[in-house]
Image (cartoon, rainbow, N blue to C red; front, side):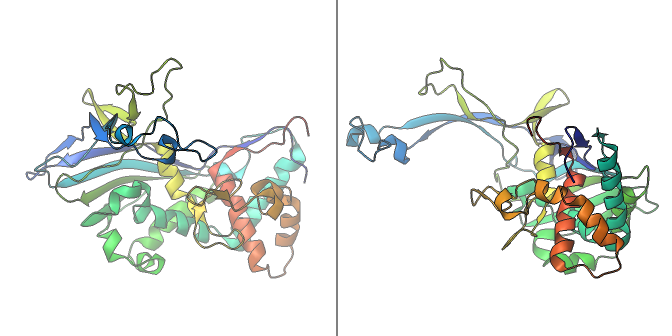
Length: 353
């Protein structure tokens, strides 16, 4: 299948920003605050001493290296006396993946709609929905903020839903993995909500999330950072330039730090372990980027990048229409392909092709 010059999908999973609240001994809550500090650090790093050729910088004398390196940073922590921290956000699931938001080629549109319908009937949404739900329930979307906690309790209030809130208690220490979460009495109904949202013509499911975290006294909180650039005329040694700026929102008129919705979405989409030689899951994306390894595991040379597989959509439709057993590799390719449609984005070929 040849990619058209206009092809785009609306995302089917939409998280909100995460707000933080301090919880006090009387169970009252107040928005978490943060401040800016100037820290006197050491002069470290290779660039402070060595040139690109490996030569020692003349100015890097023993006395010069002993001088302090002041820098300004935003800082946030659990307020002294607080019982813990509560995090709140929401996640919405929709059926936008069922057809392109924009497509200039009717044939491509029919093929992609057929692909989703056949995936739904032959493979089902169960695997993808399970992986998304697992990353919601285990608190992965809070990133580093759960790693040093005494305990983390996740509460989900779903819609539509006839019961009350669903609680997963002590998710970091009390659950050993996928199988233990699946034993929760509400796992199957929650999973079905996601599957229904993906499968119904006007599908919609909403999860209101509250997470309670018990951290050590005055422990640091790690919100999302803003991407900032210094003005061209800025003095590198000017300590007034903040080197770590937190994303924030206004609660009761005051600034409060957040984890941005895009970072939340990235954590929920950390489900791709279908790439060649996979050892761990990476975020669903076009090229299987692994930031810590500083590489892309789905480089186009592997034939497993999103666009290489998207061009095979008509081939996958033909395979799914036949009554033959699909290979594990093909099923994994389809999981990955559909997960990218759920993620959404612009998928057209470049105008010069």
